[in-house]
Image 1 (cartoon, rainbow, N blue to C red):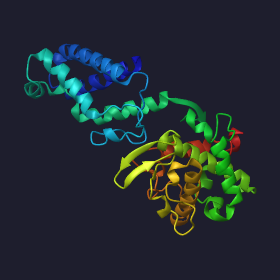
Image 2: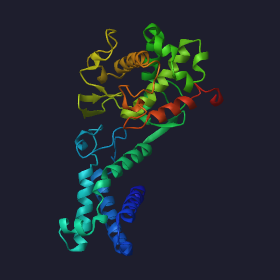
Image 3: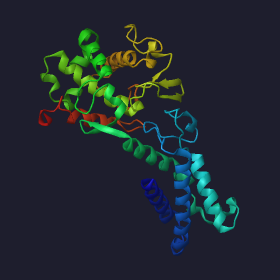
Image 4: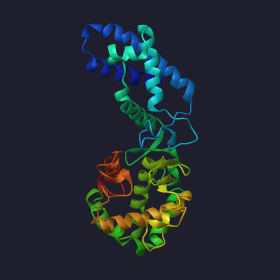
Length: 314
């Protein structure tokens, strides 16, 4: 928990220094800061234990804290953080919370709580990663697709076989479009098997950022429940593939079926968006350069650094 303590100190100290008009009161503020830090650390230790797991794809917000992608483990929400800090900072001042917030607004970081939770989300994701693929750290559960030695797991083999056995369904993926800019070897690949490996790699990194490669990952969204490796909308998957019948209803509950659906959805995206994989029109936020998750650059770098794509990394 030491890293959480450091994080809390940094966030509180930065806010206090920026917000406070009374620089000569930094000493007392730092005492309150230490008390607040201890409270947060103890609260996190007690409530989260060893099961701390946050969704880094979509930082937890006050309105969505109950819809964590990992429903099996407890989550940290904005309101609980604010309540802890308010309770601890108001009491030493012998004031009501309302009076304390008016006279010492610099001690309260409600307006920065979303940023604080997002930082924790990302740090936890990094802490829980087990190995790297093309320089990108991924969750150990992703070894069902590709492991640290770039050997295909059972799901990876399923995606690979689906691609090479049904290559005619993926003419736009085979062409690659703008992908050839990041995967410099792609245009030189004459064997569909080589291109299949590139797409298994892409699906692996996508699944990591979407769900940490967890088959049961789910979160509530405006259009229903996003579910599974690639966070497809449960029960609506058959609406995504036009008339190809590559996406079946409830496919998101089956990693192999959902991967098959994703391949076709990506092929349709490249057709629609003139070969662009990292499109702001993509179904997946992690592929949108302007998406909230801000993961498009990470996925692009993984492609660029992959030995599948860059001869310099062979």
